[in-house]
View 1 (cartoon, helix red, strand yellow):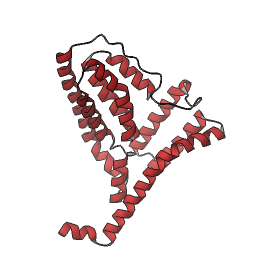
View 2 (spheres, one colour):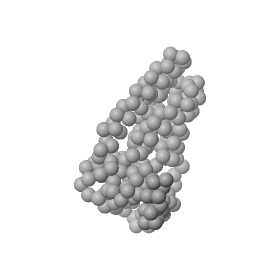
View 3 (cartoon, one colour):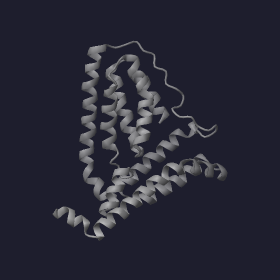
View 4 (tube, helix red, strand yellow):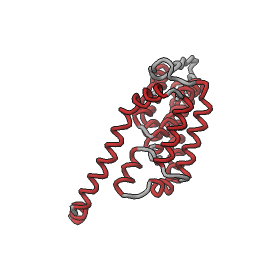
Length: 234
């Protein structure tokens, strides 16, 4: 997300209207990874200093972040969709496809809100000659991990995976497993490095897996014992 954030920050400069629009854009695009925590860290880390320098209301940042994330997080690989699918025992795409028009309308509304709030702040504060200094990286990384020369290859691979997932060309687990294998081979051809990178991210992946299993077990107990029917009748 570093190139995205750097471009958005350079675009925003000292114009509150552009800052609001850039905030909504970054929040929406970063939300594509399906992790709300990552979206908050990236968006707040990039824009909160700008809001403070310009004197903009930081609640605008929270509104735009929450609005964009709550919509885009309904992607098939997001946590809410995974929990809904496992609870209802329905394929994710059967739930997701009918939601696409709603998501498009929601994103349009988010950018409309950003435009209105940004215009209000521009009238209140004016355009400030602000030189924003985007850092080289938002996160501390181990030396030698980044692959800036492979940015376009990784972007093409990511967009292809998203297209395959949305189009339903293959089951989601298969799409992402194949994508992970390809990305790992392209970026880290050394097996020892592959092991290190997978180990570094395993701590974030395992809780999601446990959460999905727990949701399935909990729903199974409620349904199998008749508790769901009893609660509905009560």
